[in-house]
Image (tube, rainbow, N blue to C red; front, side):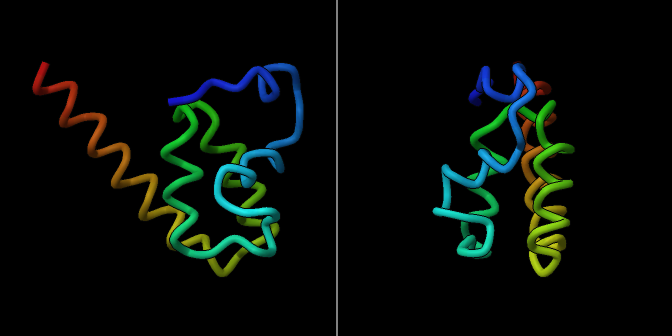
Length: 80
């Protein structure tokens, strides 16, 4: 997963949408997975906060995606 320096330098989490759409307004349900799977989980809360504000209709999808990705991470840890 990516750890963009732009987030570390305090840039807005608005940038996160660029991996899946031109803007939050144009983001489709299918793009939610791409956003969360692209970035380290330490950034998820900031990304989720922006998504919740700009696309409240996708909050449920975001929660589901984060839970699925977290489960995948835990299962890969157990496999090692």
